[in-house]
Structures are given as structure tokens and as C-alpha cells.
Length: 460
Ligand code: ARG
Image 1 (cartoon, helix red, strand yellow):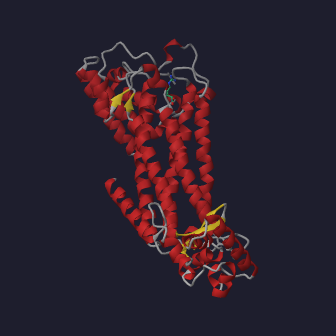
Image 2 (cartoon, rainbow, N blue to C red):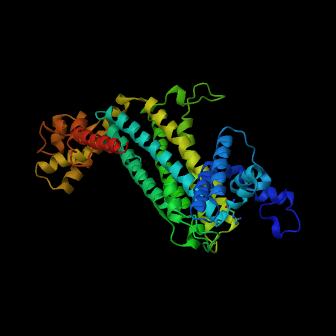
């Protein structure tokens, strides 16, 4: 097949090279952005008198038809036409002849692909932001039900201090809030229009770049033609943000996998979100959580792949950069796949409140509070720490929790201990006295949830 760039060639491309070079398999998903970009470019060329008004109108009208035909599944793309940009141009020229050949005036595929990719990723980023807001809403709803659900908090995966499930869940809300802000930030830097950079040295035609940016809804235009076609920071930055989202999802999934184990039994995944074993009849596996954790690795891989692809490239465009698409598309698809399934999984799981409470009571999670009790009665903290350490040792030996010690037993450790110790080290007091900003007390978490809801309402 004759190439759009075939003029200086004496031989046709080897079939294997055609297949090797072609990106239509994966860049066809940008057809809408490619056509919208071409419509804006062609209209501007007409207005600026670079091509005739008549040609410009013909191009625009036919591009709209092509868009509809692609939407309706009526068009088969050709591998030989290499990529989405040349496929569209080829179809256009087949349909309207001469005028179609004028579309590419003052433009290169290098600034065209930079434009398409920015537009495509801006729209995907918007969708992911919306999904993230959805996930934050799910977390908030779940947290609301569990401001009284006491559970052990951990450090080193050893029981530390009692908190509530709501407090734990709202920690993830904060992570996603930061991810959301990172996505907005990343999108802001994507929102710059590169068309007019040409192949790398801009163009001698009197293009009106700002009007193209306005027509396509961009905030501004790129300020250096070399950078305009070489920059893939926005792809890498997005891959970074997506990696963080996956990392946060993966940490929660890891916790849910632990929590749904027989040893923890804090939660039980809904049947609809678990799978069985082909050999062991008793099994109910948290596959969904595991797959999200697993898919995190592939998104990290894409980030590393993109960084590596770009690290040695001299300015400006190099064909290596065609390798930016599959990884970022897959990273985007993966996050879009994981977020909704994660939301459904956590809203359908059963929380075993009693087991959580027992877990909190059982691990001396109130030892800090027992020490604080002694401090409030006048003992220096270091001494209190030592006294409670002895109490814990005594209780471990007898398989008891601190609040099961009798008054006489307490007195053996310190004369200053009174009856009010029982209230001071109850799980409810341990949690609800921690009411400073950021703490797990019911009232504090309720106000954090209220603030979260205000934040979510502002995003609509
Ligand atoms: N398919 C190419 C890509 O995805 C488009 C740009 C081609 N430019 C070029 N000079 N060969 O990067």
C-alpha cells in the first residue's frame, strides 16, 4: 500500500516492518481525540487563510462523518496505515480527495500525537477522579456505621492501642483525598495544547494556536516547540499518581486478606466477592482483594517502564515514544477496573464487631492507658511504664486481661490504684478519651466524617 510519506522511497516497507511499526492496534482508542484535534486544526487553517474556507469546511464536515462511522463500528482500520493519525487522514482523503490532503498543513504527527495523548489522558483522568470520589463516598458511608466498632490498632502488626473501624477506614479516606488532589494537579499540567510545535521547530504558517486551544478547551499553549513534542512528563506523572492509588488500594486489600483469615476473623467477604477452591471444599478465598494487590505490581511496572523508555532520548520525538501508550493505557484501565470492584467488595463484607472488640481487649491494648492512669495520679511516666509492664507480665502468666485483675491484685503493683482504674482502662474510655484532632474518639471521627462529606459535596 502507498504510504502517506512514500515520496522519497523507492521500495515499499517490508511486511514485517509494517506490523512492527504499526501502533493502530492500541492507539485506535484515541480516535475521538484525533478527530476533534483535526477539526480544530482544519477550522483554524480556514480562518487564518492557510487553506481555503471551502476546503476547511469540507474537511470538518467529513471528519464528523468519519467520527460517527467509527462510533457506529463501520470502519476497519488498516495496519499498513500505521497509526490512528494516518488512518483517519487516509480515510478522509479517500472520501473527499484533494481537500483531505490539505489537513496536515502546518502540523506533524509528532505534535498531533502529543495533542491526542494529552486529550485522551485528560478525559481518563477525569473519569478516575470521579471514581475516586465514589470510593471516598463508599469509605465514608462505611465509616459512619462503625464509629462504635472497637478494634485493635497495630504497629509492627502487634496489637498496639484500641481504635475504631471508622477511624481505620477514614485513614484511607485521607490517602484517597491526597490521590484526588494529585490527579487534579497532574491534569492541570496536562492541560496545555502542543499543536503548532510541528515536528520540533514549529512552522512558518501563521497558525492561531490560541484559537485551537480555546476550541479544544485547553487552558494554555506549550511555550517551546521542542518541549511540546518531546514532553511525556504528563504520562509519567499520571503513572506515578496511579501507582499511589494502587498502593493505597493494595494496603487496604492486604489488611482485608489478613482480617478475613481464620486467625483474625474480623471480617467475612461476601460470597459474591470470594471464590472457592477446586480441591479444598472448606475454602473461601479473598481473590478480589488479592487480585487488586497483584495488579498493583503491574501498574508500578508501567511507571518504571515509562521512566526507562524516556531516560535516554535526545530531543525531540523518537519512535521509542510510541512505547508510551500501552503502559499508560493499561495503567489507566487497571485502576478503572479495580476502584469499583474494591468499593463493592468493602460495602458487601460482613464485619464481626464482637471479634474485633475481643481482639482489642485481648492484647493489652489498654496498657498505655493504664500507665497514663498512674501518671495522672502523680507517678512519673517512666515509673508508670515499668509498673504496668509488670502488671502485663503478671496477667500474661495467668492468661488474663488487665481489666480482669482484682483490686487486691492491682494494689500489689501500686498503692495509688483505686477502683476508677476499671473505667480508665475500659476500651470505650481508651478510644473516646483520645479526642484531640485526628484522634479515634467517636465524636472526633464523627466530625472528621462530617468534614469529609462537605469535601465530597464540594466536588460535585
Ligand atoms: N504512532 C506514533 C506514536 O505513537 C505517532 C508519531 C509518529 N511520528 C513520527 N515521526 N514517526 O508515537
